[in-house]
Length: 196
Image 1 (cartoon, rainbow, N blue to C red):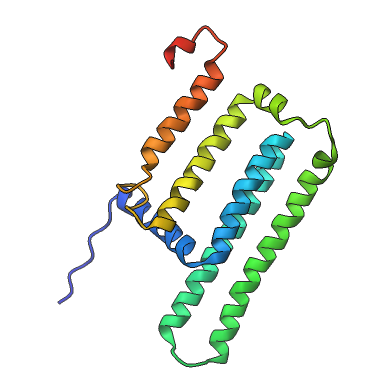
Image 2 (cartoon, rainbow, N blue to C red):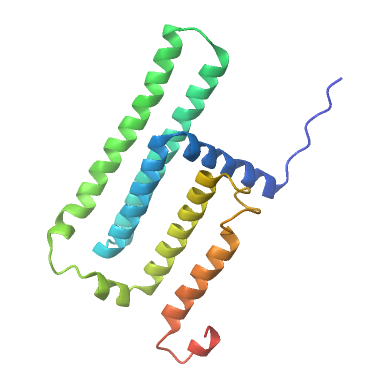
């Protein structure tokens, strides 16, 4: 008689989810491209000084593309596991899943164009001025980029699990990024002694 599988802890559930993200990053070239483009878009969004609503639209578009790519990979894996010979229905299912990624990507490009077209043509958009005047935005983007780099590095090297062990240490990287952001934000205030 089969014993029921034990219910995973919350940490194990997050670890399993991140293992899925890492597997897709490791095995799917398009997912690596999407992650790289997402990182570039976040940096450009900060440099261009997008509004909160524009940032929300960009983040939702990025998430939509990444989720569609992951569902596409899951559909392809399930079909490949269930059939070893050519099946027109299997091909159709794979094509539909790939079409979902295409629609998500076209949507993301359209949102990016709407958000960035006018701003990037404006020569008064100066990165250093924006960095000095938006420490909270800089902190958020630095932390998100740190997470992306840690997960991407773990995916490429295959070391450790997303939330435990292996180099780079996500905890150490986030702690360092948080300390640097705090130092930057509090650098010219009377509270700077708290972080230096």
